Image 1 (cartoon, rainbow, N blue to C red):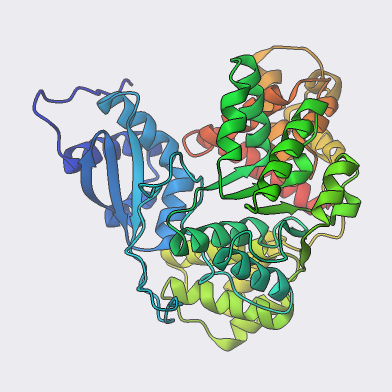
Image 2 (cartoon, rainbow, N blue to C red):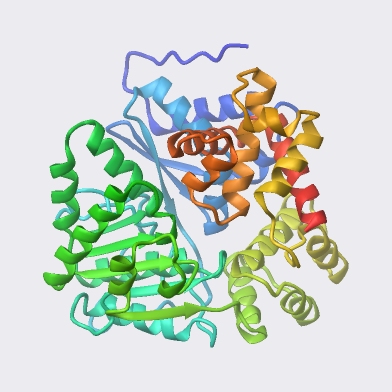
Length: 465
């Protein structure tokens, strides 16, 4: 059934546009209207200015849930109603019991709007304001990296920690920490130009600049920043020219005493895919590790996350979760989200029995890593499609669909760079791999069948790992 996108000749209000978005979501959800009653009914449209709809949400959990499950559909609807430049922003109103960290001789900033730019920032920072030092829980596992991060945010380019190289396994909080560093630096130094990039985005922007013959513009933009953050540097592989470009940008910024912060999944000496002339420069500053959280830190993280959402929990349940979810910070957050979903959506009582069920279903503890081979085998068996077809050149709809899912799962659950994944999938280039990942990510919130396939396959993979 088609969705009407006609708007009146008079300028629509934020409330009218939001109501139209709800109608579209309602039709896509079909019989399952619980998310609208639980989450979307609490959303308040507060402004519509220059095709930007701003929504106020009651907590961080609501923001994350809506952004993950409904954002692509809402943005598409906005662009049909308001034009191709329409976008969505959020204002998160979080009531926290814990007193927020105050800066010396400074008032706390007003609630942030997603995304926000300071007038002196000539281009987007790409920083996510939800990640701060306030909600990055300190422990023995991260104390050195956290303290060094605060130092470089306070005095960018003026400490011995330049570059600051933060490393640790997947899910230990590297991305959270570097966003917190960037946000803190931005608050203290509004005159500084700050830029956060994943290595994938660095590669993509550089590749695009080569194709459009605008390499000088790309180079000038990155050399103009005062504070550069590059996340997951281990994926900066491929053509030699990409690493060569990064090498020159790094040298320029370092010589100008501009701050550089880098993350990776391993110590610089273990980054075999990177040129030695680059990894040797990482040793000029501080390499700070992030280890899996110890019991006390896990307990503190759980208390903080639950307190943020206004949830009271018995010490027995809290201790059980801290003892049984030991691998990654991300796993702790995942268990909390599932518990909240069970209690808020399904109206179940928060009990030790429920906690045991969630931990058992979540499977955060794995003795073996998931590999691309595991994923190809699981997808092949699930869809009854031979592995040779998944990795081959077939463009049959059902094969391409299964291949998209396999690529998405490989990117999500392994550490391989885009180029390496391309080799697994028949020598495809990194842009093809990235397209598959983006397609699945965009369709998951609105395609229930695709969502079911991905969840089924993840259960299969976690069960066998």
